[in-house]
Amino acid sequence: MSTAEELIETLKQVIDPELMVNIVDLGLIYSVNEEDRKVAVEMTLTSPACPAGPQIVQQAKMALERLDDVDEAIITITLSPPWTPDRMTDDAKDMLGIF
Image (cartoon, rainbow, N blue to C red):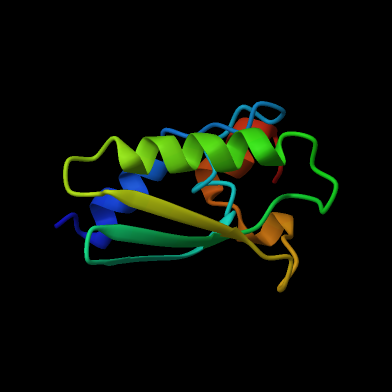
């Protein structure tokens, strides 16, 4: 079974195509839980009308399901609490020039 850290590292492979920063450093991931070879991810988007939302969700699902011990990844989008730039890591802020 993958650890929570391994699942998060896997999600770092998913890049927001508009901002070119991974979804973990952007602060889009709210929770990751694994049980019985299924991973449930609760995440948000930078805006409710994010045009890259479906692509990001699909890429997150595919990345997790490539892991040997994951049979299914279920990605749930929530808009509560809403995303703000405060959720980003310092690395992401540096990449985007936010100080």
